[in-house]
Each structure stands twice: as structure tokens, then as C-alpha cells.
Length: 600
Image 1 (cartoon, helix red, strand yellow):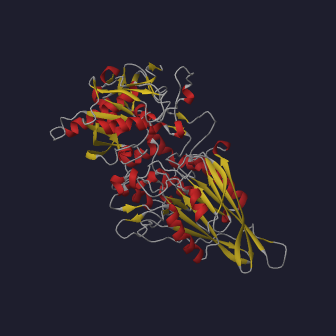
Image 2 (spheres, helix red, strand yellow):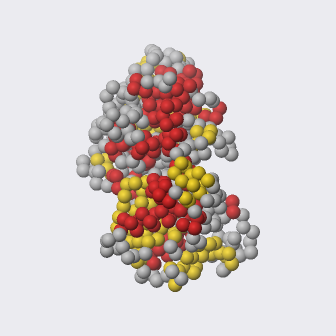
Image 3 (tube, one colour):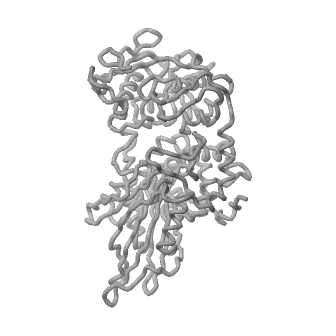
């Protein structure tokens, strides 16, 4: 019998309407408090636990494979595992000496989160409780920073999720576009009582990613603005100190690299957590998110104070739990942070928490049933195994669906006669549509993001520049040199989702040439591409809004857009066809060459 999730909901919702939430919590007397040497020194130790980039992973389950999650490193994922780790830490440290936070990207990323946003939406009258709210309430999170993917389903869905949480969603740099005041609580404060000494106040400042303004422009433009993390941290950290915060922790949905994926479209750095530590005085620790990497402990020296700021990023999908162990000393009438250490604990080392399993099994089972619905049949197996470096029919399926949807949408308009070309990326290296029955699960594994479709107006010259930029994905490889496909792609750490096919054209990519000089034999309908030719470009909203910093597309005229996910359009297309046959969508549009000779 599933647990009653209603008892895990808070009695009154946090609206976040421009008001900071100070969640002072009386913790039990701390067993860790003990007198130090000397008559007036006292010490106290507390632990801040953190997760990030959960992306809807409640259980150690791969909905795309309909099986337990596995990877080459033997990792395990899911909040149910994290709950066990949290219970262990609370037992070791004393629950009254711990704090549990998250750095964002919570409600998007798996069929589970899609189901409760679109199929059985939490926004419907009398709708369900979001599984992530139920799980995180039950585990006892204290505060969660907003991630960029929180905005993928629109502000209404985010606000409904917020109302179902027992903890505040923090975003000091998510501002109301009209008033420029915080649209969500900027911070959270928890008070820890210490026997024989004044209480310790811990402030958590939440910062999210400025890229939201680009990636989810359709939802946030004119409603919210997202200034830089450094700017807002510099504003809020002194305020928190003036309010009596003895410890300041930042929960930042921003990586440490100091780089941005959106080029110069914004004046703010996307991955600025280390810069915040370096530039803004008064911070003790930063829980890092967004980058999906594991950093057990990173020490950054603040350039103004010379003090060490400790950063940690637990691996995404609840595969790790970060621990910040904070040691304080009370002297001269105040608490001072003496030492911060960070480490991570591994979810694969523990079993699921049966309490979380019981709580969410019913939701999980519903989603498993949904993704295993049969929508058609395939005449042969289609796979993405070599789609990074060969024109694969399975990616052509995406571009064909997008072309058809855009052509239908523009029928009868002034742009109906223009040729439609289409973009798609090899998101996954393991996706497969098997011969025989095709399920929603199969199609979802092909298109793992909740992107929507946009039509842009582009010229031949702009498309050429777009393709040159995309071709930078390949590592320059001299003619005659051995080709190792494991080392052929991801030049300059460019991820697979920032390499694009473009259908409807024919072109070669000469990987023996330097970046910017690789596109050869570019043609349309058998003739060399005319730079003045106009095209309708079918493109996902992430790319259309500037994601990946591809040239021209973000500034190009928008002809049409919609809110239906591309994944859904693919399922509709396959359902209407009934039979998935490559002859209906596959084409060889491009190939890798070296000085005119095909690589494969």
C-alpha cells in the first residue's frame, strides 16, 4: 500500500512573490558542541548536505531501457538512494546538526517528470502531487535553488511545484522583469542551537543560471530577468552577514569553468561558481550545479579577504551526495568559521530507502506503463551508435518530422513556397529503435530533451556559417592518419548535443582542414548553394534561442513556433504512419572526408 503523500505537503505554500524567506528553525541541542581548551572558547560542528541536477531521478531506473540503471562505472542513481545516505549522515552527526540543500534542475529530465508536467499535469484542477515534491518533502530538504530546467514547462508548472514543496525554491537573481525585485525567495536561514553558547545561524543564498533568459525565452521574456551570479551574490552576502549569519553557503546552479555556451549574447558568465568564490567576500562554501560533473572538493581563495572558499559538486541524477563539514569556534562574543571540508558519498554504496520506494511506487508504475505503449512498428533496427560521425537514418527521422510539421504550419502563408531545411543533434550514443514494435519509450530515448519546434528564416550564407560552426565538433585529422572514432569528436569539449545535422542540403565535412574551412561541396537540389537563397529552418527552441552559440540563428526572423515537444511530434508521426520504414525519411545529406576522400 503506497504511503499517503498528502502528509508530506506543507500547510501553506511559499509564493515567493518578491519576499525573502527566513526559515529560522530551532534545532535540537547540538551534541557536537564541546568546550575547547581555555575558559571561554566553545566549538561547534555542523554538516551541510547537498545534491544537484536530480532531473527527476527518484529511483535507480532507466525508463528508456525499461530496466535498472547501469553504466560502465557501476553508478547508481535516484533520490531513494540519496535518502539512505542522508539518513546515515543524520545518524552520524545528529539530525539537529545538519542541513540538506539542492542546487537545481529538479523537475525535468525523465519520462517521470514529463508525465507529471504534460500527461497527468500537476497544474490540472485536482491534479497530482509532483513526485519530486513528495520525495524531497519526505526526505526533509531545507532549501532548493532554481535550475534552468525548472522553467522548461513554463512558470505555471514551476509555481505549482513550488506550492507543493515544504521548502523554499531560492533564486536571488530571478527577478520580476517589471519591479526588478526577487520573484522567488533569495535566501533561507536556519538556526542551530548550541548548549552553553549563542545559536549558530546558517544562511543559504540561492543563485540560478542567467542562460534561462535565452534557453526558455518563450516562457520568461517580459516576465523575469536573470542578472549575473557575481552581481547578486555581492548584493546579498553582506545583507546576510548583517542579519547575523555566522555561516554563508551559496547554492548555485552554475558550473566552475568560467565559460558560457551562449557566446556573447549575455554579459553574464554561465558557469561562474568559482568566480563568485573568488570575487565575493563573505562566502564559506558553494554547492555547485549545472555542469553534471563531480567535484569532491575545490578550494578557491577569495581575492579580497584571502580566505578559502570550499566548493563541491555532487554527480548529477542523485548519484552522489556532497558533504560540507563546517567547524566553528566561539570567541570574543561571536562564532567564526574555522574550517570547512568537503567530500562526496556514493549512492551505489547504499540500498534504496524503503520509505521512498513505498511513497512513489505507484507513480513510477504509471510512467512505466505509459512509456511502454506501442505506437507503431519498424521494418529494421535503427541506432545512434555511429550517428556522431556518419549520417544515420535515426537522426533523419527527427529532421523529417520537423520538416513535415513546419511545412504544414506555414501552408497558406507568405513563406509557404520557401524550401524547408531541418536541424537535429545526435543526443544519445546508445538510443535504439528495434525492428518490430515501437514504443513511446523507444522514441523518447531518441529525443531525450523536452525541446519544442521553431521556424526561422535563414539565408544560404548564414546556413553555410552555421554548418562551419557545427563542424568544429570534429578533431582535425590529417589525410592518411589513423582514425579513432573514440577521439574523432568533441573537439574543445563540445558536447554531442552541440553538433548539428542539417537535412535538405548536401555537403562534405573535410576534417583534414582547420575549423572554419571544412564545409565542401555544399549544394541544394544538385546545384551549388546560392548565398542569397532563403530557407525556412526547422530548429529546436534551445538552438533557436542561442543555445550552443551557433551563428545567426538566434537573431534570425522567427516565422512560427509551438509549445508541443518535438518528442511528441515524433510519436504522432510514427503513430500516423503505423510503419517506420527508412525509405520514408532517410537520406544521405553529409559525409566526413579528408581532402576529397570519404573517411568511411
